[in-house]
Length: 585
Image (cartoon, rainbow, N blue to C red; front, side, top):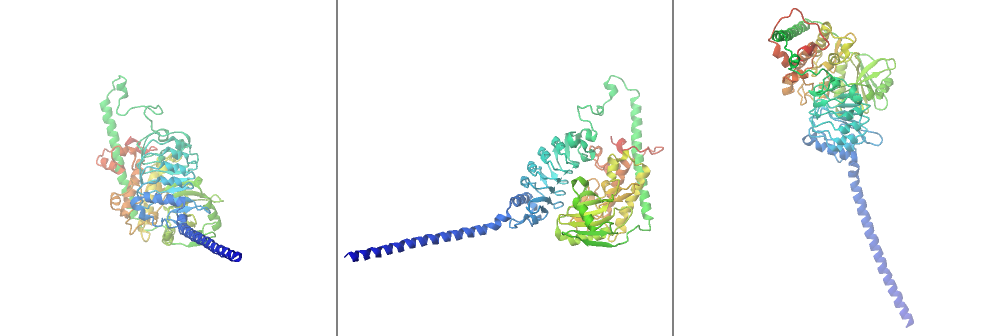
């Protein structure tokens, strides 16, 4: 009996052990299934996590804010694991943080999203020549590494956020040709590295702060804002005594209780002098243009224009150097080294298609380097072929293109450096104090500019339409010989087909009415712009000077309003520094 009981107990123990082992195996199987499912979920979610980096998320929000124009940025996709490969985006190495947004001339609409503030490593923001509206987001202050902001030629509204003064590294700020209003924040004066400021052609008002670096910028940084005043533009503010406080349309003698003597005759005499001066000016302008036309028709021999040798050099690290016309007397490695060292301290201007730097070689020779705003890599072959044509053009009144360099981070055009700068600076800046432009000098500039433009139209094959003739694109050498610059860039850098464009290139005030209406650029639209330039050269007034705008006119409308009045004077009056002061003060 005892043995039977023992056997029963052993059998029962074995049965219980089997049941416990089965439970353990079931638990293990369930655990393995759960782990496999978790790993599967983790693996399937990994690509999405990689694609949506913080910078990538911010860029996608920026794209959405461009509303109806998002199809322009087809490479900006959430599925792409590397936003550094998106159109117009450049990143730092090796951390792959967004450093540059370069999207000019992209027909972008909508607003600038506040998500821009999440790109805290951003150094360059270039959204100029688009159709953006709305305010400049205050969140831009979080982009603490920003060096350059290009937002010109949009429809931005509101004011400049005072927080922009927190961008301590900012060197270039271009907000020109927008709809911005309000006062200019004094915080901009604290930007000690700021070298280039352009707030022109907006609706700013009030006194320009004179604190910090703001006091160092000339009137060209603020032109076209009729309600601005202050020392920078030499215009008195109401209630200040910085300038003579004589009210317009008031008689200082009458206000003091003194009767003026023979006031009526004096008034008629002054009116006659002013009207006669304007009429004589219009007649002189017609004579100048007629003389230019005769000179151009009688010109039989073209100047320069021989196609010349081109030298291509590929240098290490993915850089490419192409030189035109004649080889530069420097090694390719030396040129590349100098180009890579250029920074905001070397900026000498900002043109319609990019920033211009001055590059000084070891022997003291200077070159002008234009960093162009072109981000579409697929156009490299077409781009370089067009540059071959531009590099082969030689003329005494054109700026020579000496070379082209493609770096991993930029495309650069190398030009001869023209010492005295632009005609705009001479007409409207301080350069006339050193070398005034008398009538002979202005005639020389008019003739040279006409010859350069005529060469582009009639002696190049195919003819080149400039599309942006203006005073800042006429450069002067030490003998005041003019040289037309930026020719060919409009066709090269703006989407076009037989000169018909969806984006009008050029500068307001110089554009022909038919070009503004249909976007069809021809030699005739260049000639119209040249005529506006001649009016500016003769009068010393900008095409959109405030004295014209107050009357609802531009310089062309003003000349049209006085052309039928003719009161001959015995001689043309001597030319003051700003010849236009007597005509619309």
